[in-house]
Image (tube, rainbow, N blue to C red; front, side, top):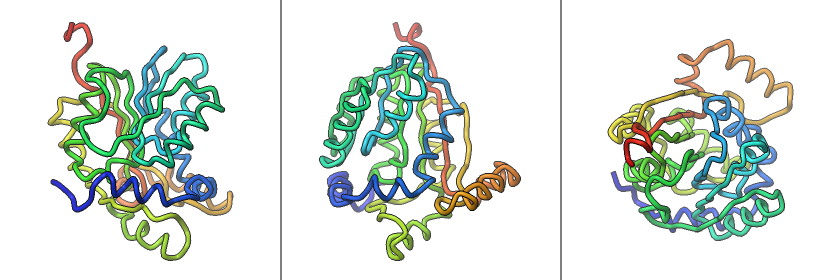
Length: 247
């Protein structure tokens, strides 16, 4: 399904969000996209990692610092020229071996079967062509490699719309949340197997005691309940096949 915006529109939105990092420093749920997904999959040694849309590079920096012994290297694709400049500076200062590229259309500017792990944090909902985008995530990943996708749940769409009006968060710009089954069906159609799934975040921001309460409540409710009321879905898929089969 094609949507009524382009990736150039998304780039324009992020280019105008000058306080993106400052706002997310105050929003606990931002860093949790990385923290909550990390235990669900293994980063192979010497892995080539594709991070898309890498935004300001915080995801690549997170995994590089989390696994300093694994000799990871990163390709970061971003739609925003502003974020490309910020990510390049951030990753250079952090010593992360990363190449940062801008893209505003599909197919992605990377070769087929190139990456051991592909990361896509809160990006699927911004792409005008979600099924084509999922095809691209699979195409760029090596056979047997992992694809990690996070995206907000449809239930939280009203909150995402209200938050910038109330001055609580930045606008999400052009986007549309996808239903869980839509995402799952798309990956199955691309011959991928679900490795792990988790739904997280009941309280995205606030004082430490409130955040702690929210995390405890998440544990008490369990995945079946969180799936209907929590903010973020995390999926880890494996691209079926192996490099030996493709040789």
